Length: 394
Image: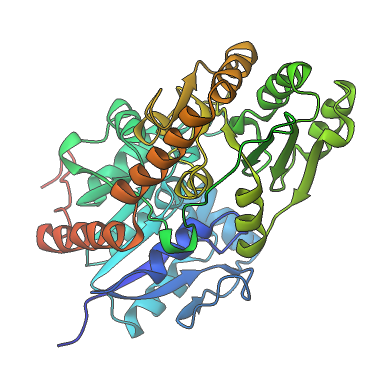
């Protein structure tokens, strides 16, 4: 019996920080999939055989102007993207289309309306934020919700945001991204006798990760433990700013920015570390987290977490059991949480074990893939929603 096919649409396959997408598409068991993308990146990092690379869209300037401003057709038409999509799905069978990221779903509305089969769209965090430069975006998002049988959210907090902007609650399903936990085994750690605590944060260097708050808390913590160090793994637009900020606080070589690390390097780093930080915060543009995958990986190795009451983090970290949670942007509270960790080696060990156990119970990759495939089953069974008849038309 042939497997059903889901086409996985991701505008770029894949940016370095999109490991969670690769894990999801490569973990499918009952479904086959092929990738539809505009741009292929990191092919060595994310090998995948079934790639459909869409041709670069081109339209004559006058025709684009005519379609956009005279005919006022959707962007897929005036940018010349609709026909390549129609051609692709005319020659390749798919039972379902999974669109990664809500803003991409908004962009693809015309195709989702045209295509005869059902689609699902998954939201991951930044894609629920409002867009001041696109005043019609909320209405377009609400239109998207009418075109799909199911909407997937990485966390319950994101699900609540989706309801608040108009997504029917009965369409929303949780879509946890799974972690290959065998690759992040529990590590037995010795607490440092000389106060040389090693703290780690792994993320893109962007505002919602709370990195300035993390550095401020570390600076305060280091007043009591001058041999403590902090490694911030990853890259992003804030790298230079954060390096300057750390220098201004006199942290010098106590803070390291090694960039992106491969899995072996990351595992070795986790094995040397004692605590994991992730003080995420909602940005001025309302960008927020789902559940950070790097945090789950660290917890799997037995690292307790100091984080914030933000987004989906409380769905993965139990305050006082697998870590400590503090208010957003509160460096003093975060530093106090770090001090609580180091007061008792036994409590620290117990929290690390509990962190590992909780991740294994809730975020194991094969179980997450099975739940995603169950959502695919349900979406196919429901089918594509019927087209709405506009008032005044028969």
